Each structure stands twice: as structure tokens, then as C-alpha cells.
Length: 420
Image 1: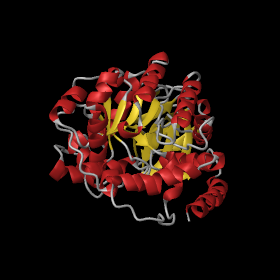
Image 2 (image 1 turned 30 degrees about the vertical axis):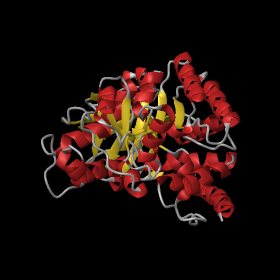
Image 3 (image 1 turned 30 degrees about the horizontal axis):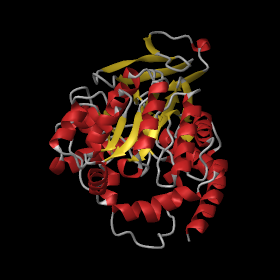
Image 4 (image 1 turned 180 degrees about the horizontal axis):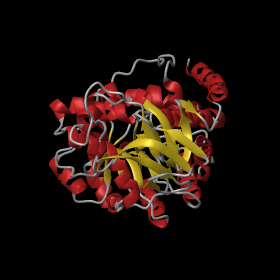
């Protein structure tokens, strides 16, 4: 059991400030409690939090570990002219090169980055068409060693042939038979009716939900309407994908009013990824008419949820209906998604200690102003996941980061050579 001494705890829901010592118990979905006069001998670790803020750690609503080696990579052989070509010449080229070692060290790198940015839970969407079988177990293993909780899926798609789609379904089923996870799919325009229906069956069999890109670019809508005679969301609705409370629709930029209404009246969730949308020049997110089930992700751009929240707020000033409370709600909604669906690994014993020394007063009434304009990932000093310290004094404690990064550079170099 960990003791956080002299803490100023900020309730992540009410934003109430509580000054107290805190006991943090170990274990999945463990708890914490405020105490007086603690006995030091009862604790495996005592962390002095004088002058620090302590609050619930963060969660990434949509990530791609397979993009970890993209930073600094060589440019594509052909410059993309639109969104489809970005996928074809960059991301679909990268994912075909990934082998077991590349996936493993991409997962290590991502888990470390998440921990250092204060996130202890990651919802990831993975693709490696030439390393499908066992890929999710490899990712889970790396995340577990770093100490990051997760909800994984494999990106099922027909773009690489029906045999690869079948292998994606098999990988999903074998993983869900032993761990919590989702049924991953790429996007409507790369998924046949047969594959979609089989994915729905797998989701039903394991009481799961879909994790799928939806209307990220107009191409998705245009292809779906031309091929299936209906919009992206209508197609997913008709298939039963929106019946699952665990379903996550990623992006949701190019929607008509009927699609927005279908989402709002459903049990599913929407993952907003504003920085990726800007990078791909596909449009701007607008939560109007979608309801409150909106979470924030990074889409593999980075692992910093505080940065994602700020981006959502600032870009949203012109393109969205968003204010301080809405930005914070979307930032924290991942906890609601996880708890309402009974996923494990996001208990109250997942905490972050922020070394945020501010020149102005910070309290319950003005915390959101500090959240948008002040607090950032550089203030993350310590991170506790499932009641265990995974980051202490800015340093990862569970694995040797230097050794992992040295090895990851080798695998990144192999990938980059294959891309030339």
C-alpha cells in the first residue's frame, strides 16, 4: 500500500480540493481513502506530495501504437494528394512492414509515453497485416510490463484480402476469449458486408463492441453511399453496431443530421481526434447533435491527453460548441465509458501527482482555467497505476527505458529502411 503524504487532492468529477494524506491500495479496480495520522510501517512506499496536486490519472480514448516509429521517418515514395493516398502511401505501407519485434517495441514506446504524460489506461486500435496472429498478446504483454491498463483490438479489414480479414476475426476472437477488448474494424469503405456481419457476431458472442473509424473523410461517405446505398452511420446502425454500449465510432466528421441523431439516440460513443484531423486536412469535429458520449483520443499522433484536450478547446472555438466544462468533460468521459461498461483497470487507485506551482490561486472554482491554460504533461511528476508506482520523479520505474529505447531505435531503423 502506498501513502501519499500532505496531498492536495482534486476530485476529478466535482473538482473539490481536499487536503489530506491518502492511502492507495494495490490491485485492479482498487481504491484510495483519506486518512489522518498514518503509521509509516503500514506502507510499502511513502511519497511526499507537499505543494503537489493529486488527481485521477488520464485515459486515451483512441490510440495507434503502430505509429510509434513514424516520428522522423523518411517521406513516402509518392507525395499523397488526398486522404486516401495518405492511407495508401503512408499508413498502409507502414503497417505491412510491421513484424513481431516492431510491434512489441512500438507498444513499449507508447506505454512509456502514456505513463510519462499521466495516462494509465489506453484504448488502442492496432494493424499489422503481416503479423496478425498473436499481435494483441504482444501489445498487451508490453503494456502490462510498463504497468499501463488497456483495451485493445485488431483492425479487421478487407483491403488486404479476405484471408487477412478472416485472420483478423480469428485474432480478435482468441484475444477476447481471455482478455477484455473490442472488435476493431478499419472503416466502412474497406469492410465488406460479409466481414461486417461476422464482426458483429464476434462482438455479440463476447459481449463486446466495435471500435471503428467513421466518416473521417468524405471518401468514406461517398464510397459507402455508392456501394451500399446508405451513409456510414446508417450502415453501421442497420448492422447492429450501434446497439453495443461498448462501440466507439472514431472521428465522425462528415455526418448529416440523421446520422447525428442515430448516434445520439444510441448507446455508442464517439472518439474525437482533432490534431489528427488537422494533420490529414480532413475537416473539423463538431459535437453538435451527437449527445454527451464523446471521448478524446490522439489517433496515434502522440500520447498526451492534456495536449489533446487543449487542442479540442482551441480549435473548437470556431468549429465546435465547446467551453471549459465541455472540454474537461470530454477529457474525463473515458472513465465514464470504462466504468459504465464494467471494464477493469481504471479504479480510484490510478492517480497522477502534478508538480504544478502556479503564480496565481488555484481552487475548485477556477481549476478549469488552469486545466486549459496552465497544466501540461511537463507537470506530471509521479503516476500510480493499479496502486503501483510506474513513474516516480519523472522516471519510469517498471522497465528500463534506456534499454528499451536503445532496442526500439534498431527496430525503427529496420522499418525506415523498408520504407525507402
